[in-house]
Structures are given as structure tokens and as C-alpha cells.
Length: 181
Ligand SMILES: CC(C)(COP(=O)(O)OP(=O)(O)OC[C@H]1O[C@@H](n2cnc3c(N)ncnc32)[C@H](O)[C@@H]1OP(=O)(O)O)[C@@H](O)C(=O)NCCC(=O)NCCS
Image (tube, rainbow, N blue to C red; front, side):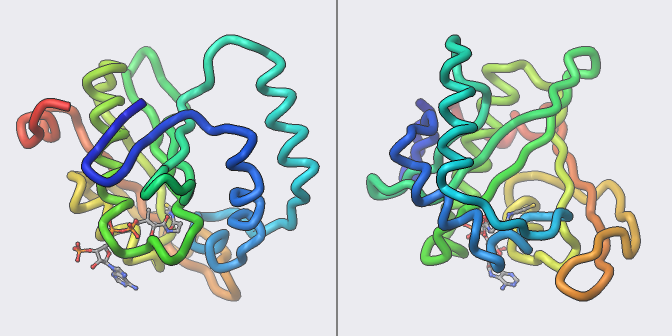
């Protein structure tokens, strides 16, 4: 649906779930994701949740599969829409570690910001990130996010308290830097 140079963002299919299940049970991936501790998850539960959601009909929500080289490598999403303030939160997880630190995250985030600002008329996109996740923070900064706040020693992560960093990007700062989608 959203096509970049190397990255495509598309709807999530049932065939993606087996790889997603592996990602969800990878403690390294889960720990980098944010504040929640890792929990085990069965493939059956993931499939049941997917099937329940599909049974509702209509359109998918704004969660996208990240596809590179025809392969499903993770997910990204916009959520917590505030339709009064025109803001939403962004989340991303590349679960296939072979695809970390090669610019795919940055491209996926850029596509998602284009969707938020141009197609959904959002005014601001924000996120929260574990302060001990420099790879994610660098990728977010490269896409225009700036640090807006820091909750000190706020999250228990892998045996220690870490800061929770709050970041945001405004459409007015982002749009002038972009070429047309
Ligand atoms: C966070 C994530 C989306 C970033 O995507 P990516 O494709 O790996 O990142 P990119 O290659 O686009 O950019 C990574 C940046 O971090 C830097 N980097 C890479 N590894 C690093 C490390 N171990 N420490 C510090 N910086 C690092 C890269 O040099 C690059 O910055 P630069 O362009 O300024 O040099 C992806 O790594 C991911 O999903 N990780 C697991 C889940 C996660 O952390 N999600 C974020 C939750 S808030």
C-alpha cells in the first residue's frame, strides 16, 4: 500500500503470523520494544486474535506489515489517535535482526509519517522509547523526531531502571523536508 525504495508497508496477512510469533518470543526484540516485560505467546493465541479481528470485517486498522525483498520483517503502526488535537502515536518493531541497522527502519518510519501527515492530516506524531535503545533513537532523530521529555528511571528493563524518552515531530517541521510520496 505504501511503497518506498526498498520497503513496502502493506496489510498484515495470516501468513505473516508465524514469523511474527517468532519475533514476539525473541527476548532481545521484546526488550528493545519498550516498557513491557517479555511474555511468552503461542502461535494459536496470535492466530485466534487475528481471526477475531478479521471476523469484524471492514478495513484493517493502521498497523502495517514491513516487507523487504518480498519478506515480512516486522510491523509498524499508528495508534492512539486524538482527533481533537490531531496527534497520534507511532510504533515500530523490525523483528528480523538480520534487517537491523541497514536503514529499513528509517525508510518505514518515513513512509508512515507521510501517511500520517499527508493522508490522515495529523498535526503531530509522537512516541516513547527506552532510553537505552540508541539505535531506535538515532533512527527517530534521522526522521525528524526531537526529544521532548525524559521520564527518569521510569521503566524496569532487563534488571535496571531506564529513562523513558518522549519524542515528537510536527507536520510543519517535517513536510518542507520531504519530496512527494
Ligand atoms: C528501532 C528500529 C525500528 C530501527 O530501525 P533500523 O533499520 O534498525 O535502523 P536504521 O538503520 O534506520 O537507523 C539506525 C541508526 O542507529 C545507529 N545504530 C545502529 N546500531 C546501533 C547501536 N547498537 N548503538 C547505537 N546506534 C546504533 C545507526 O548508525 C543509525 O544511525 P545513523 O544513521 O545516524 O548512523 C529497529 O532496529 C527495530 O525495530 N528494533 C527492535 C525493536 C525496537 O527497538 N523498536 C523501537 C521501539 S521504540
